[in-house]
Length: 98
Image 1: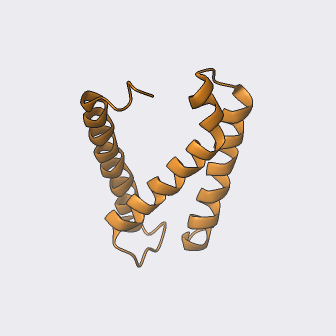
Image 2 (image 1 turned 135 degrees about the horizontal axis):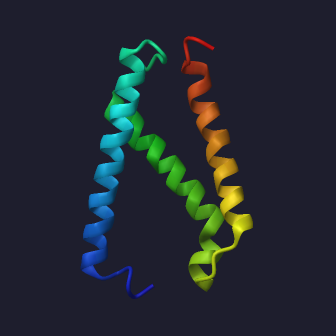
C-alpha cells in the first residue's frame, strides 16, 4: 500500500483515468452518432459515471487480492460477471436496434 501512495503512481493513475474517460466518451459518441444508443446525458458525465461503476465493482470483487497481493481467478471472474451485468442494466434500455 505504501507504493500506491507515492506521487508517481498517483500521476500514472490520473493519466490512465483520463485516457479511459477519453476512450469511453469516444465510444459512447460513436454509438450515439451511429444511432445505436440514445443518451440524454452529457457524454463525458455518462462516461465518467460508467467508469466509476466499473471501478467500484472491480474493487469490491478484488479487495482481498489487493490486501494479500495474491490474485484469485474466482475474484476476476466475479468482477467481470458483475461488470457485464452492470453494463447490460445501464445500456440495454438505451439500445435502439435490439
